[in-house]
Image 1 (tube, rainbow, N blue to C red):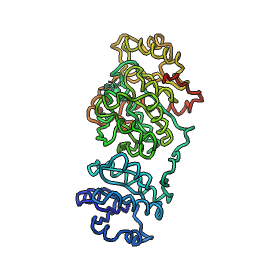
Image 2 (cartoon, helix red, strand yellow):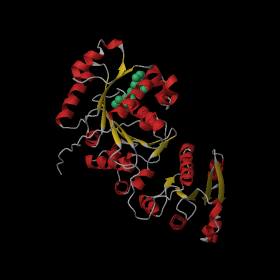
Image 3 (cartoon, rainbow, N blue to C red):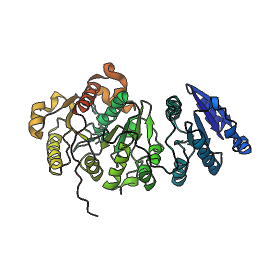
Image 4 (spheres, rainbow, N blue to C red):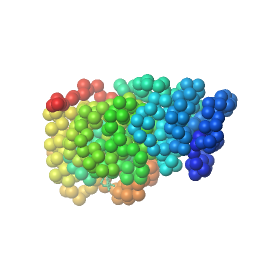
Length: 401
Ligand SMILES: Nc1ncnc2c1ncn2[C@@H]1O[C@H](COP(=O)(O)OP(=O)(O)OP(=O)(O)O)[C@@H](O)[C@H]1O
Ligand SMILES: [Mg+2]
């Protein structure tokens, strides 16, 4: 049961949260709170503290932040969440004041459930929250153990997004809340639509200086998929991120790698600047090919180039997707052309397209009902586990200023 105190919210928000499973809500109007000021904090029963305080937009923001600072100092296990749309400056100030997260009043129920669940987990764990004003974000995971997995291919439409989204779901089944999926197809990324999520923040916001300077701020920009992993979706318009530099992308992935055990990166076709930047910080690379001759040749060229650039870590995998007999090629022929063994073969399976068209990745059907695609994704996961983290020294391209 998550005990939630809503301050200054409207009836609609209270009604929505009230019907979510496992919540107990108390709401106070903006007038009551402003009349009580800090007596409100003193009047909280120490035996029945809320797990979560939601500070809504009807309250003056200075007041919300003041209350957040005081609560964080006195009751560090209470989660503080701002509800509303705020400027980047307010977001930064809020995080420094101990605010844990920011949601919009229109956030989907899945997002609210995530906020409530996390607050309850904190109470159960009894751990003070990591929100000392101005403090650097402590690493949630040891970066030595993090795996940055980059999915690439020279060609479009070969299944990069299908593999990366389903891989994130499969990894999150085993490591809930420890996985983030990054849509690095900056121009035409479709991770959000593939997962049927409606994000409030995207890559456009994640590449701002505010997010680069403060990992707390970056974390508030991630969407949460109901199956238990975080998502950084692509920007709404290709123009929004067209000037993103390799340095920014590397910084972003490195920040995420301090917070999540698995960073899965979906990329655009070919080797554009963001993809090369991701490869520089990759622990594992999954190269996707189909049985189409031009794709197989493209994969060979891409692998040759990555080897020359020293951007192909030892922990690499070749996945042959959309495999069928109609191409006239056999797996052996593909291996002969690309010069590497094929590690996992995924047959063409109509249910994959059907599932992704419905915004419900096939992985959610489970091992029994998901068919060969789900089985293959589990093979990829098992292989990643067997391979362990590569001890490669990562290679950085020389950057011309
Ligand atoms: N094994 C499979 N069997 C059947 N359909 C598949 C399979 N893998 C992927 N698809 C379908 O192929 C289409 C393209 O897949 P996807 O979007 O994952 O490719 P992509 O490489 O990310 O493409 P792009 O380069 O355009 O981003 C999708 O409709 C997807 O559902
Ligand atoms: Mg794609």
